[in-house]
Length: 486
Image 1: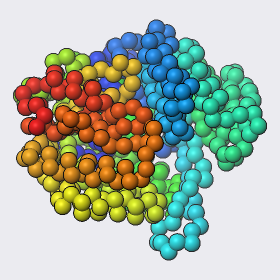
Image 2: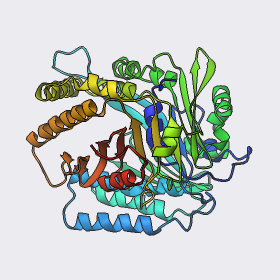
Image 3: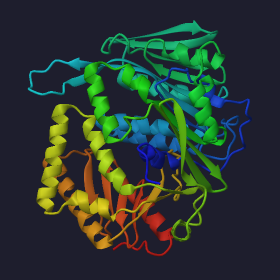
Image 4: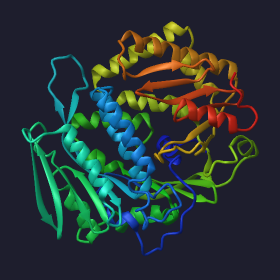
């Protein structure tokens, strides 16, 4: 079965799935009970280890958090992190929290408006006019690391000259509230415990919605008919990771100008005919499973992209030490074609024109039809495994291996694409932590943006990608025949 549009996210998040955990009782909805019924999009995940979500204390403030915090502190003290790098570092510094607790990232509401422009264009720029989003972590009262992360952001990005920090009581809980005069009126931050959870929210009223759903005073997504059916058919009760998007709700809440851009993205991903989209990932032993349910014309339809089995070739290629792995039945050529198109469609008109010029320069300088060659060389499945394990337990740190055809042609196309991209990046100027694209002596290509990664290489049988050059080389050394770099 060909890959469906959402499989790109599926591929990325599969790396955060760990070994199977104890089955959650049917009566225990977990953080599903904190998702308001009319949410636009939701991402839910359980801890990436075998540890029970009721025992997070040993993870909190553990070695991974301490090591990452120390590295970032040294870089910051040395002045080695400019603004862009610092934001990235702070976000990365929070990722281990997602591996330590059950979490839910919830897009509650979004609205956009057109921005007047003097440029002659049929597609106007769009800016947010309202956003409500929340992150809920099931901490079981172990909130110290979450509070520390929030405090770091406050101290670094605001001050009492432009911001007001207050405290109020909601549902019997003490909630912190931050308003910054540099931000729109709707962009207030609130955070605090909500029962056994800790909720961080952006947008007026967002915190109350999530906390209210958790208390049962706000209608929940888990009680909506379409979600209940999708959740049942995809074995969501056993899933380690789930995500869903209400495409219909997203379209209905946007202005005409914003909807034009969103529609272009949906068209690029072939999502226009879908009303709602739900994905669930589970594990059987070390094998990962991936199921999807879509709603069209009110009817729920399901598909299986990874059924917990390995082909003989996949079993030979995946490192025996990988704790979790999967064979995803995807059309990698479709991904290569559609994901860039969707990204371009999501940008402003000026940025779209710039990206198209960039791609034209790449193909002109390389003298190759890079797009056609790469699409033709990629296979129709993708191997995903969590080897090597990330030392800090950061989610999404996976290794991907795509079976390929005609490795010589693919190698030429990848080198042409990456080489031309690297030259364009260099012409734009350089800085200590500016993003650059580099090629190591052993043929590994990688992005450098303060830290090195992700990285990729073409081998005799696969295009292999991992979260850093070192991780990629370690994965190559542990994989089966046919992974020797060309």
